[in-house]
Image (cartoon, rainbow, N blue to C red; front, side, top):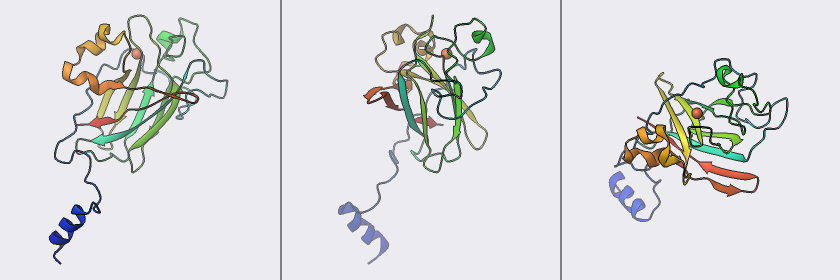
Length: 201
Ligand SMILES: [Fe+2]
């Protein structure tokens, strides 16, 4: 039997591995968004993927199991990509000096984390459900570094947050791109969970 004929038979029987997601239709790239003023100017003592448990104490806030995959436009994982996230604590403070010096920050929240994805492109952080602060709807900042050095800076917002529609950063996105930065949060036994994939152009 020729390979083609064999593949056709196997495919008909559903026995061939599924092609990468949307092989024919390229995925839409996650749009870039502003970095904002609060990328850490000094790195915290800990940058591991668990942001809610530092050597000092446990963070305030609602737990969020934050997972996803870093994908290329062809739907294949991007192994070796590095993912950084940063967000404000439950009191609305970032660890960046400019914000932290206002006081009232939560010393139990790490505020920043980074990890390198594996061959499957997957990442997982343990953090808190993002909260609003004056002028912004809840969000988590991302920087994703491709192995070739290109960087995507963006933000993940929470689907259904009433403040999204009034948020200046969100409104800067093309309307067709807005759904790409919204993550659906579902209840989990210990808080919330979500899966938010980042698609690199
Ligand atoms: Fe922010």
